[in-house]
Length: 275
Image (cartoon, rainbow, N blue to C red):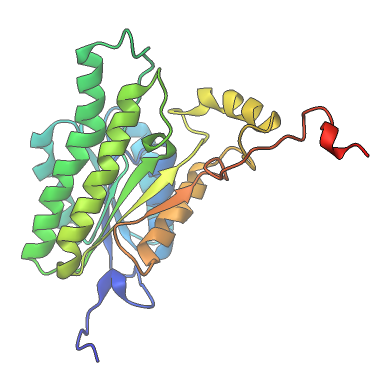
């Protein structure tokens, strides 16, 4: 029989009470929804923003209205030197950090035949290098302080569905999934859970422009999509990934887009159906 008394996020009944989370890119969109949902579950939250402090303060107000503590920090996640300040601010505000949500990310449109090295580096530095090394810093902090925490990566269906006009974004998310799996294996013996969420077509500033294309594809039967997703859908999946009895896995939040489908209902009647 197991002798563990503190199973953290591997417990059968995961509790968020007295938890403290860092949520990168949490002033708007998916990060905002995750921060608010974590507070609703009982966690204190460090809200990270890059440019829009007013939006971050609005999220702070919502977290505090739920009875939880909230702190704000301006930090460009792609600046690795800012990571220490991020962790220190959260620790000073809440006394510990046992949750990290790697959510911040950017995208750019560029034909793969015209994409520049500068555009490529911007995407890879922000979406892959930054969360990989922020995870390293926070993971070492958890190990040193014997904190059985949880780390969640906001991934994307684009880590498996290639786009020739968003190639750097797709590559960054594919690499990020491998980062998640590698950390999950390394940290399991320390009781730290690491999972990912494959976000689909979500109604946010980042991906709203893509929604009509997916809706048209769904209407033609090329893909299945119940509806465009909301940031709250991803937030709910994030909580599920934190409660899940598993590590190193990706939970989908894509509304069926990744479901294999060949729908012929819009085609003319097939000859074989005629008697």
